[in-house]
Image: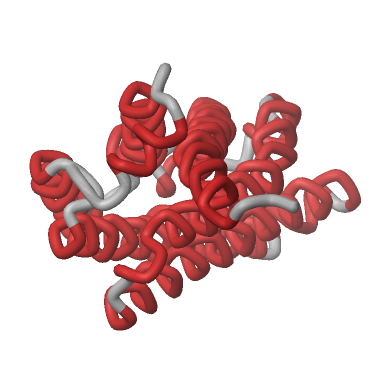
Length: 230
């Protein structure tokens, strides 16, 4: 029969590592997808004639195939972070944290689906999609979903989590302050900058790496002692 204390120590040990692994996977997959899409699709919407549908379709298709796996890793990251908060979780900020994370994921999936629709439509009727205006409309909707709405939700996600960190002391205060600054950039940014889009996966990667370094080589009881301390 397992002892309750032993189960808690094992859980406190695996939780930070699970969050770190999930966060790193998300950051790598999502960041790679963003880079592939930006390299394939021109940032200037007014100068986009749709030539990339013929020449760079494979790169975009690869990026779209990475999105579902990035989404799975991000869901795991959210779940493990919430589990780490435990009973000290603030209901208000936890609701905003969870809601913004799920909205970010839903918007990302929707944008990816629109991009996939453009690729399929072009493969079936290339001239029709370019001449009818469907391409221009679909491209604008896709970029607004991913680069405006999803990015804003990522900023809200970061702000809510950093606020929870400040209230609970589960993360160093410096991380929370840096997170506020990066989130502000996401909230007020205008345009389609690749560097701005990479802030969120870069931040997730940094937080996950910090979890790994923080808990590297610690015994279960030592990790449990760190739970609830910066």
